[in-house]
Image 1 (cartoon, rainbow, N blue to C red):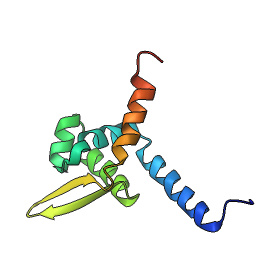
Image 2: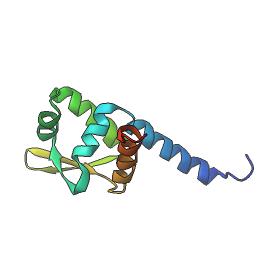
Image 3: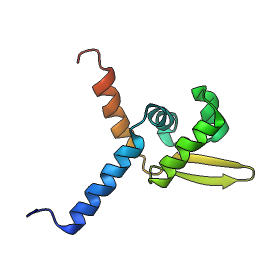
Image 4: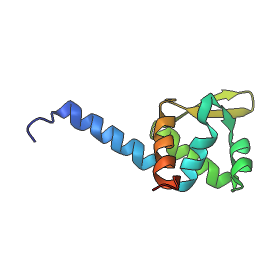
Length: 103
């Protein structure tokens, strides 16, 4: 492999896994709702997206397991939020690449 050492391989694998976790239409939609430092509950997310609670929980679990989201419990509610606010730049890029009418 030459120039790519073990540490770089690990970082690349982490980056690839992060992108794989994001690579689903509903997960991208969830992340868009959490931009700007928002902290939302499962209920707030599934109502905003118009999908089932179980489906929302499934996607949130994947995003949390892969290090995209964090959660914090407050009483009966668990709030989900972006682990790294820098992820919004990836979301902006995806939006520009897929939704820009000039492309």
